[in-house]
Length: 522
Picture (tube, rainbow, N blue to C red):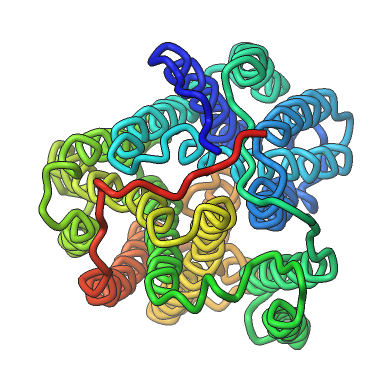
């Protein structure tokens, strides 16, 4: 039967609770990165530095689809509450860590809580607003909360690290959780879309976990030690093998994690592929644009942060505009393609940027790119929720988030190969031209790290004095190699976006006026 009608105040309160949950996820992912160098300096565990991020990503990616399915089966409210508590507890453990190993383990636990939150929070909006037109309008709150947290996170993380200490960046989650928990407990309804026997395929969950973890470990190994090593291919083989077994098992399981009927739907296949490509392009821009500004254009972190802010800020503005424009369009499903066309232009304009480009123009180009994501990210979730049955909305929403994350891992790895190869080739040509063959100089110019790390530049300066070569000119010329490599990554993104446009133009009609199937309150 249908849930009892809710007042506007109750709906608003429930959405405030979900928005606070979204802020909890988003702000943590942005404040921590700023503090990591200081954390490593104090805890003295540089060898575990990559795992401070990887442990979180790995457990997060594994939990998202599992929680999406559990939310469909048992209702989402209890999992939202449990995940807020777990995420906050793990955040406190991170802040209390006395070693890098303790921090990595706590970050893994935090990723479990974050994956639980992501897996159920976005689908909770569909429980509150079965009518798709209402859902579009209220979705703007989530986009706004995500954008505010994303835009303010780096600044807040830097300020806290500098003035309060790095431990405070983890404790900042506590007041947000304290605000979110009572609101969610009181106002978020628990709605169940499945009747009768309920079970979940735990063997399938294990295979999915092995596949995702194997892919993440392979990309990490490839980035840090090279993609030609046997261990990389071994990890990749395990990931692909577990993924193939997972798909086969889903067709033979009585309670699959990801019901095969979903991928029997052409629109689901299209939208998940688009989510992968969107995650790929977005994270390449987010991760490599700051490197271009600091390492390639020799800007300070503060100046680079100011220039990159429009990329993050305009995602929020684009999402808000999207919520206003979408209900007025005759063919709202085409808005994803229009956003991608704007991104295609943005990627091409990014290729033209150089160190002499006016600051205002750089901010404008980043703003265009950010605006384009505002027309893609919310619509991927909204449209996949419209093409699946009510009982599958949770897992379908989780699929979008998972595929975006997998796309980001693939994108950053491929871009890393392109950037590092371009830089290494250019640096090698510079050394040959200057007739420098000293292994110490070659080692320092092996990666773009020398362009952003003051200690490496100081070491290079000492070598320049002893070997009698112009270090300033060498570094300036090396910056050109980094910029060219990142430009090549942008061109790759433009190609991916062009393919995405073709796919998006073939999406089925998106009927905003349709009512979803009825649901059963618990």
